[in-house]
Length: 342
View 1 (cartoon, rainbow, N blue to C red):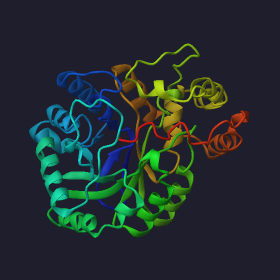
View 2: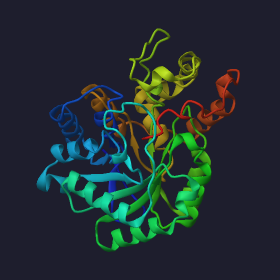
View 3: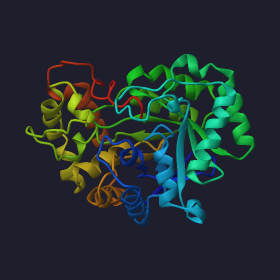
């Protein structure tokens, strides 16, 4: 496993991380605490040190199962990413829908939410604390940044970021956050099938020396290479609700990415991770992990060949040409509106 620093903060993350989302949200299957902990420990044994969660995942369960996996002094061996800003406790815990909870940004709420997260995580600090899916007007609230300043000063938070939400556009928010806010980096969707608005945000990150964590590096599984035209998703699987053309068009697109696997002698899933890590500003990728085989494959991507500049340019050219397919929807429609609470 290779590791990359978040700016000059002293916080270093594994370039392949673990999104606790898949263990707690119920959208990728149901896991007991012990089953979830076993997968996290298996990933740790293969070099994964960065575990990203949020208080919204499973109504706090995403944090408690992380403590279950790494209790007591074991916590010091990992790097924790967490998120804030949603008043998720106001939602019915039996509501299994994919709707957002309301945001809250008043100082008393934010400070209480941080202390509650620390308690559920069983720790005294969060390594990368991210404002969760903010709209532009939220980031102008002084209470948020007063809260962040106090949390840093108290040692409860080491680095701060903004986790950008797909259903709200998010390019403007990402630009503003990196250019004007006291943060160390952002989290965003970015992969070989969904390059925008990630590309212009990478340019800003390079200029401002910001770090980026990438989620959905496999385009919700499309870039793992296991789907066929006959694939059927479960009722509670968010991919079941994609546009009808998502699966057949995606299959046509990934055929044109076979040069990455042929030239670099790796799986499509590994090539997708190495492509997402091509920019040095991207410090970690968070593939959706829900079984041991994925852990074996994805952690091995850290030892795979780097994607070359020429290969990256070819992927960009394919994307700009929509992989030669008719344009039936916006280029980023795959992500739009599908994982808003994440």
